[in-house]
Amino acid sequence: MLPGGSQTRTAPAATPVQAAIRALNQGRFEQVETLLKGVSDPQAVVVRARADIARGRYAEAEKALTPVASELPSSEAALELGLLQMRLGRRQDGTKMLEGVLTRGRDPSTAADYLRLARAARALGQFEDANSYLRESAALAPDDVMMNTAWGELFLEKYNKQDATKSFQAALRVDEEWIPARIGLARTVLDENPPMARSLIERALKTNPNYVPAHLLLAELALDDAKRDEARAAIQKALQINPASLEARALSGAIDFLEGRTAEFMAAATEVLKINPVYGEVYRVAGDHSARNYRFDEAAELTRRSLSVDREQPRAWAELGMHLLRTGDEPAARRALETAFKADPYDVVTYNLLSLLDTLDKFETIREGDLVVRLHPDEVAVMVAAGDGPAAAAAQLYLDRLREVRLDIDGGTLREELGMSESPRVGELLAELLRRRRNGQLGDREQQIAAARELLSEVTG
Image (cartoon, rainbow, N blue to C red):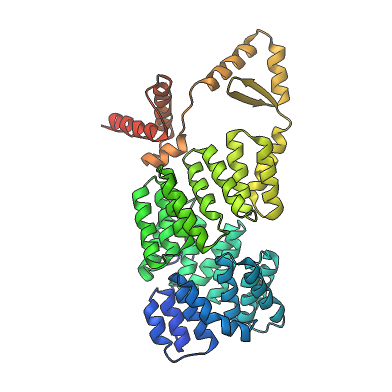
C-alpha cells in the first residue's frame, strides 16, 4: 500500500528500451547493456548513458551522448548531455546545450516533449516555465510516471511539500516500484516523520540496492541521530556504486570535518573540485552539519568558503544568513538573506527570517558583557518606569537567569535522543542538567545528552 494511495502493480515492459529503463530503475546496470545490445536508436543511447552516469562513468556517457545531441539538438540526448555538463561544472557548455533544447523544441506535441522542456527549464533556473511545461504534459498524460516524479521534484525544490507529496503518490499509484518517486516521497517527510522516511528508503533499496540517493538519505538520517559510523557505512555503499558521486564525497568530507580531521576534509574537497570546479556544496554541506552540531562560527566560515567557489547558490546564501544570526551578526545576516531571497523568492524560511529581522529592528538592545537582550520598546519603558520597584526586581532576575551558563540542548532534542514523550520528565531533566552545568559538572552537548541518559536510567530503574 502507498501512503495515501492504493496498491498498484508495475507495468510490464513492451520494448527493449522500456525493459532497459525498468532494469535501470532496479539498479541492474549490466542487464541494461544486455537488453540494449544491438539497439542503436537515440533513446537506447540515452538509457545507456544514464546507466553510466549512475555509476560515475561521466566521460563514457558524454562520449555516447555528444554525437546524438549534435545531430538532434532538441532531443532527450541533448537534454541528458546538458544536465551532465551542468553536473560537472561546465555551465557555459551546459547552458548552451539546454537552451538549445528549449529553443529548438518550441513546437511540442506530446507529453514527453513537454516533460523534456520542463526538465531543461528547471536546470536553467526557469522554474515558472518548468511548471507550465509540466502542466501541459499532465494535460496530455496525467498518469505519466516520469512527469509526476519530475513535477514532485520541482515542487520539493521550491518548498511545496504538499503538492510534491501528491505528485510522488500519483507516480507510485501507477508504478509502485518507481524508485525516484519513492525516494522523493521520503524527502517530503524526512524532517517531520523520520521513521516513515526510513521505511520508504528501505523499501526503495529492496527494489534497487544500487540507488545512490537512497543510501545518502539513510546517511543523513543517521547523522541526525548522531550515528556517524552508520552514516559512514551508508556513504561507503554509495561510493562503491558511484565513486565520483559529488554528493557522497561532500557528505563524507563533512563527517571528517566534524571529527576534527581537517586535513582529510580539505583533501576530499580538493578531489571533489577536480570533478566539478564550482561545486561549492562540498563546503556548504560541511557548514550545514557543523551548524547542526552547534558550531555556528565554523558553519559560517565554511559557508563563506562555499560561496567563494560558487556565488550562485541561493541555498548557501540563506544558510549563511541563518548561521550569522546565530552568531549575533545581524547586519551581515540580513545582507546574506536578502541576496538569497532575491535569487530564490520561493524560500519561505528566508522570507520569515527577513521578517523577523524587520521586527527586531524596532527592538532595543541591552548589553551586559557577552549577554545581549532584545526587548520591545514598550517593555523597556515599563522596566525604566518601574525604578526600584517589583517590576525592576523582576527584570533584574530575568537578566540574571539569562546570564547563567546555558544548556546546548532543548526539550525537543532530549525527546528525540531519549525516545521520550512526557514533557514534565523532560523539564525535570533539563532543570537537573542546568544545575550541573552551573556547577561546572557538564561540558559540551554530547556530555549533556550522556548525562541525561544516565539520569533517565536512574529515575526509571
